[in-house]
Length: 434
Image 1 (spheres, rainbow, N blue to C red):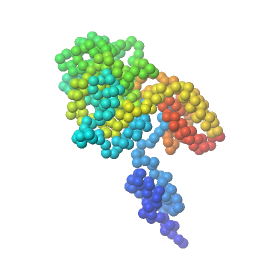
Image 2: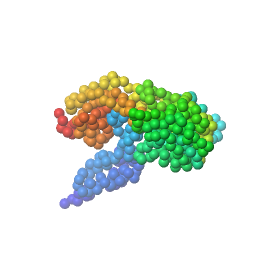
Image 3: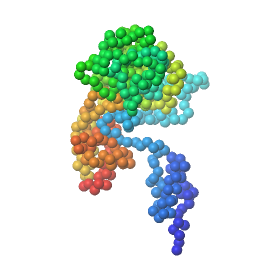
Image 4: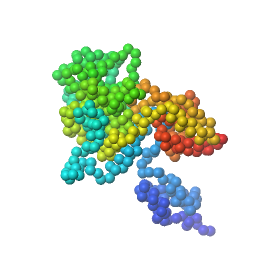
């Protein structure tokens, strides 16, 4: 009797296969070799034939060297925190590829000497918000606020309304962030109401600034009042407006959402915001405002620890100067166009499943425009398909409502419509649906 183990290929022979070598180039030899070892063990145990080893290796390897997976965001939430917030534009992705190699990020090619880091991105940001005398960028919105507190209010007092002491997600709270920088908070007003004279009585010689925080992810309705930036700017200390969502200019669909342009026009000395929300760019924290304050913060020791990478700088610049990014594009999407796409998807699926086109209500998400609803259109499927769509080769994420799985198209790139069709068809075939 011939020992079946003699037919098991050698490890080096499998690694020498052209397709396996290509995978090693893409994923790294160590990962591929581990996959080869598993496949060979299966071959020794008789679970696969020797001729199937290479195919088995390739089938078990990931598409890329990262564990992150591309998903289709059909949840109806434009800026979905759990899905990485703003998807980047094609221009931003291309710019990141350029920045991945050696670049002139801190080199003046004319003189051959050290240059100003990220000048292109900073110039683009300044051009986008002409009201700002100066701008600076750090690694996220919370970092921008931390730098302000450390640079302007360490050992001093920040005056803030009680109703604006918000939690920004995953248990992180604005008061804890500010106090970690050495600032002392002086709360004014009540949970639901604050008035200008509350601030006036709170300001003394120890006051460094007044902070106005946009609630971002909640609303207080009913018997409420708050003091706008325009009124706060009459006080004898700088006003810092944390607008959160990164809206640089007013948007017609978000009339109540604060913008950097309006806050500065209304007298804010500084504005802080995120770059990966309504701006539609990479994760970044924006600081805009008075030149003396921005320069002071840019030179603060903590600013070095909060510095963003050349890859982020390049993506931010491309977001600001390139074609409209996905999030602003989604905000501008018309219901009629969404319905045409939904009908096309339904027609492509009618042979395998009873899909329906339904009206849907979308949301901005990401701590932006709380309470604002966006009319949208979705493709309705059986609710119990949600898990299967999440588990597919390219996960498709929707939301279940009234017994239906709704695949909302407002945040879906039109180029991904075919991916939805392919994913649903694959599940329908597996379910044995007509």
